Length: 381
Image (cartoon, rainbow, N blue to C red; front, side, top):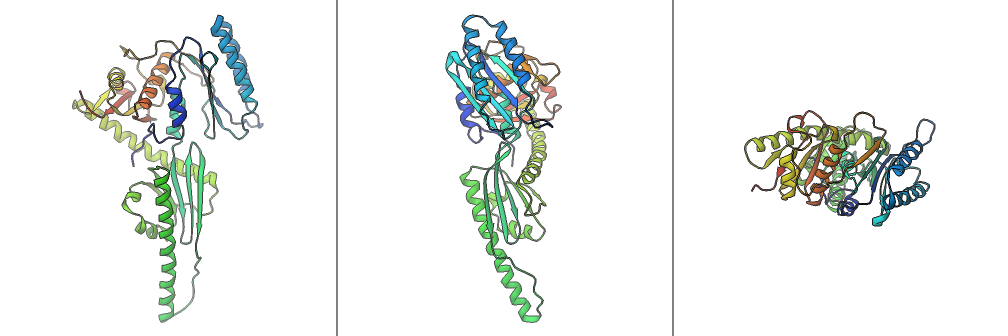
């Protein structure tokens, strides 16, 4: 199955819908991303970052802009006192002047601390989390037990377990052994049919397009024989995991398999996009052409670098690019180009608003020759 993130099928769809519809304002809009994971001493380390950045930003603002920002800071600090301890990440958006305050606590981690101050919510990191920690199913199965997980944003959303009759080897001979063997096979067949029924219903009800299977050599052919074509096409990997593997290890192993698969489909889709672009067909490449295609509603799938600093600045901008600058504070280190981050955010937000798929390409070399961005199109003009 191809890798994609759509505006309709992601865990953060509702939040992205609301936030992307926010109209630009003259008041400062705070977009805060925090890594909430405890350090080796069991303590979070975002306090020092917030004290410095909030103080620095407040000093440079004047009048009503400062009043709005200071009110946001107060609300944020109050909210942080109540954040659940198990959260690994936090995305928070605030603008008191526009009555905006929305927080998203995450089981998935956020890389580093980030504070963006602009005229609209900065959503590129939030959209990328959908891509890094997608929704998918993971099935562990043997000849009498099955565990089915639905994972999304780095956590289990649902868990179903099936147990059927456990058969044992029996030392018999002749006709008795043959009858017993048929008896065992019937139990295994019944089990696999039940597993597939539950799997089919879950994949359909949860609108899932990717499945990772873990089973042993005995269960694998039994399962694959029962999988209908529409489910078999969604299997992206079949691995070996013990049926009693702890949930956190199931998540880490299956997510790793998913990302390895996605790396291969990244290559395929980038090649497809560049080929279509060179042929003058359903593909564009580079910031300028991709911006124009987004503005005209042509984009079917946006392909954008997962590193905004590698995005080439556009020589010309379409009229709908938010004119206000973005101020950035972060613990990420290195050169931070706010113009590139603002442009990356514009690509992602407008792709989401138009229902386009969004593909964050992790390998920096794949899109390097086209400025870090391109698109496959729905139609040409």
